[in-house]
Length: 518
Image (tube, rainbow, N blue to C red):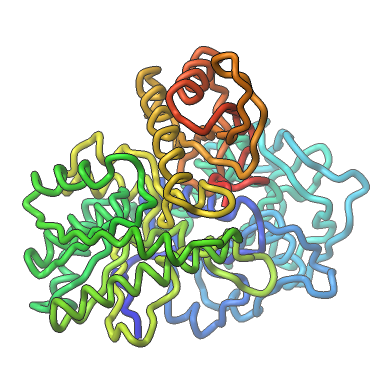
């Protein structure tokens, strides 16, 4: 049975997901107000909800109509919990529908900007400017309010834009306060959480570190913990947090899969030596290349890498004697993107550090960062003493360069991408935009193109350059890099990396694409 590290007696805002592309942003906005939030699927049982005992519940938006045959819904029992509830878009319509109101398809579907007009000043809308801009995305609207509700704001196209039942502390907004396009969305969340729900802003990374260290000491005691150290920010912060809690009983194992960035092992060794953490190194690159030979399908590559990673750990664990715990640098976006429920959520991609352990390992799983978004992980790393430049390094996928090499994985193809990727990151740093970006990397494509180099015809690989900006990796926009940067990157890759004769730039945002190509 896996053990997951959670806080005890923590104020939690529960977000029930009905399939909105913005659900993750709701969680981010709540946490920005220093209150812990957690996303669960709409069909979470009442038993589970009562066990969590949330201080407030937010119902997300979604693509469905409440009258659809298989429309996602909730038990009316949720309204009897005597806690504040906020419905957003579909969440508003569902509240009205379940409590006796009426929903109809609008004559004019509303997508984009609108301005709200306040009917009256309330605690929920306190300080929100009359005429404030909001972001709409709906085809249905509330035409009849449930008993006990009143409208407190409207737009030109939506009469019941904001509805409130102050006595029962149930609220609804037709727009999306979580997106940046809604000018005073943060103020609305603040009013709901601080004024209505009376939750104190106590979710800080300092408190997270203190509580986590204490909990880790209690649970692990004098037992040993095996940790897979990939060199990325997540696993590195996990290592430093565990080292603070249990010292030498942490056994970090760095597995050289052969799929890492250039000089990754050297960088990692130097950083952890300064922190007094001894790292056990295993070169398993030959094994990984053998297992991946001939494999082209993305999901199969991920699963092979995950299984092989665990197998290497198992072999190392046997050498080290009895070890009761295995630690992983799982973060909250990993958990969200690897969860599949009937209805709105679907598996985007599997993460080899999510989903439990093979029975043969007979270890309990410790995932101390499982609750955190990437920016929160970086803040924890800073508190624990990791160098700033190390913390600010761009995220690197668990399966490594395997998800950036489309098609078969070979040593030669990995070598090409390592060199091209190094050039991209070096030029981005020279241009002074590294910290503006969420990620900047290269992707080796399984296609060849004709070129001319040194008066000779070439027929070599294409490298795609990917640069994106994001706050947490859940959504991302492609970065409008200037021509000088792109020219420098292209010229260097073609001149310095044998086997690549063409460079292209990826201008796809997430959604509809993903950040990684596989």
